[in-house]
Length: 322
Picture (cartoon, rainbow, N blue to C red):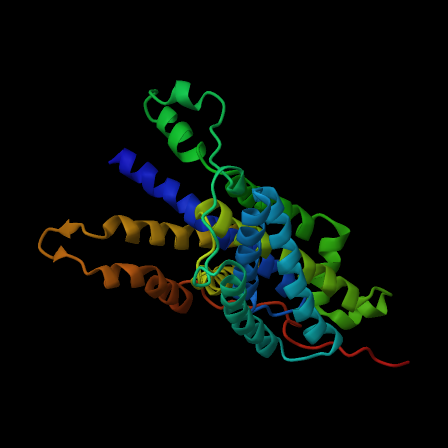
């Protein structure tokens, strides 16, 4: 029983990684006042860029760099539409999602001729699992050895980076001058402007950070969790990350816990496929697959209370003339 729990928690860490990175990306963006429905598109664009570059150059690290550049480029497009031209944040985000969904398949067909996919990655083209020191030695130690060797060890570097991003985000948002200004511009951009700080520059920096983290999430999907790009492989993770962001009330640690919860539900759903429950029988696969999404809706609807985002989120800022 304990071993099964460890295996589920191990899967939870892997499944939660792109959610954590995307939710933290959304946190920076929305804390600055920019609604980002386009997380899904940036993850998908980053996944394609990472897999395509890794297959051409044979390096997962080169793929990661291309993923971040592609995602930052999409983030800057969103920023240009919403910050510079004060466009509708939702429309811009949906447009990015739609365009990227079609563009990745089109480029994949043109470049690789594999039905919108990229070639299968292997060797240095993928981020492989890392065995922590003494993991094999401690594997036979009861409880502690299993936790260390199975749960903590054996993940790729992007998993560890994702979890490390949580305390870094907390420090950046709550312990730095940039974080103070970020929170202020999301609550009262006029006060920030009055203090002589550029609202637009702050928001652009926030969406760039958002793009960087989404690029990490995309690279994880195509070069670490999988061995190449597949059509629509983000599979709604950007939207689930937004749900986790609301569930965590735009705070790094609660957002992490929300992502782990959603990842845990997904891991349990996978483990329950084909399992026969006494008195019920075997649960249909479709019912198992919809469980994480159904519970997400129920949790958001009834268990988190009123989630109040930054006051100025989604509102274009117009500089007042003297």
